Image 1 (cartoon, rainbow, N blue to C red):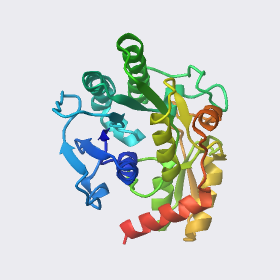
Image 2 (cartoon, one colour; image 1 turned 135 degrees about the vertical axis):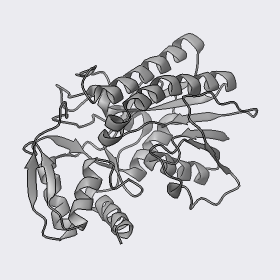
Image 3 (cartoon, rainbow, N blue to C red; image 1 turned 90 degrees about the vertical axis):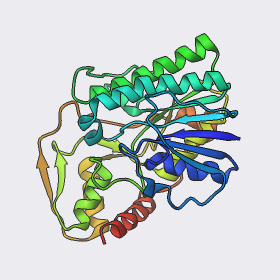
Length: 309
């Protein structure tokens, strides 16, 4: 099985490459390193693994048969897509178009890594796949939200018009080793601040909620979806919901450096709640998260502690 992973040197992509190699795939990892890092894949020592530095907003050609394409390439944190708005839109539009074209040419099965951000600042909780979302298309977060919404639309168009075998996963907050300390998401933010003995920054009053899925669970769900026969979007995330203030207190307790909590103004369009309904994942894929928050955070804190040494 020859498999392409775009964004393969990123946080999720590198873990996916590991799982695919374990399952006997020949993996072609494509990444232009705008937000990815070869450090995430330097541990891989396999004849079945190839890394290509390439920007997928430009076409790419392969002479061999391709069986699967996992399309994960995209800036995925608020800092990234606020600093790289055009690149974020281009990879969602042109990058997805190019990868779908490759899937059509090679008759490969295609999986789009979409996001819970397609729900925007949701007016329902938890979010089911049938919910259309509450998105501000011209707000600062709109470049990411709309890039992924467009990517879902073109994926379904290729599925319906060209008969391409497609899958769409909506990824909720995921954490674990290989996240970047400075990527602006709450897990590395809080852990980094706590390990440095700094106060933890909570935006707003901390009542907004998030649901945190450990990376090994997330990747297993993504893999199972690709190998399933279901073509409509599926939420993969952890339905266990925590307020940001609650989560900050958990990190302070686990790191034990005596940090305090400081409050700052809530960013524009920051979602007030985020919790997946995973009924479809349970019923269709036999999947649900297994790693507890405490266990996952221990692994993640250990990783960041090594990074900061």
